[in-house]
Length: 114
Picture 1 (cartoon, one colour):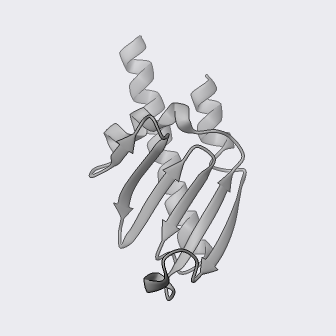
Picture 2 (cartoon, helix red, strand yellow):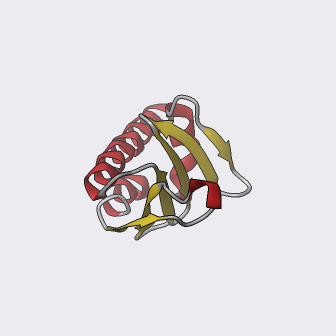
């Protein structure tokens, strides 16, 4: 039940900021979406990492990274950074997809427990 709430809450109650030129000087041209999450999503990361193709997951750091379309995505417990996101609409597309991944992970977890 907690993970179901997590999928609905953290991925719907968030703040998206589009930033440009932060981080490495060689990537000053790149826009990034920084998504501040309302809840800690680290509990969902192990299952998410199994379902996302090409995902690298570091459980000690509560950090995972993968590519979605032409964007690099870094997921932390309370923050998601989407590199090469042009605008808020693009970031929302990624967030909707991640919410679906969390819901699929929840369903998979429920099947394994039942």
